[in-house]
Length: 243
Image (spheres, rainbow, N blue to C red):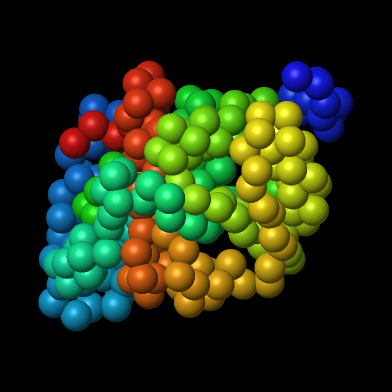
């Protein structure tokens, strides 16, 4: 196999926030989990996300990062039923076209590989509380994360794979190049597309969606929980808030 010359190897990492061991450790765990339960209950009763989050955040005296985790872990009963009705099992995606919410999946896996906290959510997905803030930068674990995705999809025997990346995010073009280089090197044969609104494309398409974005899951035709599968099967040491 011809070895391709990939882009320069980064030295940065997407590791744990300095205060996360305290914010999500044993002493804070129960407050965060109770807040998720209360927040989900309020969402089920029809409260808006922000107003419900302010109520439970104030009650449990949560800081900004803890509130962000609570928001991502929570879901109303209605959302649970809607998402579960669209979730596919591994055998159901064999031969099916797949569309990947690129930054969404990649940052989750980079975070898990780098020792950052990831969060088991009420709807069965894993989520992180990282963000790209308009600019994406590759980290030490980016190549490993992408390879895990490619190898797992090959094992699942899916049909055509298309990565969707947010065009407005800085360096998305460089990530596209890197994804295509790894695809050629490892025979993944996937496509990579830069679009202005990946969420809309995913929600309106026919392909099986790979994403943990709540709105996308609610609006798409069907989805598969690839992020959780990869973490459970390949990253047993991932740092996770214990339920």
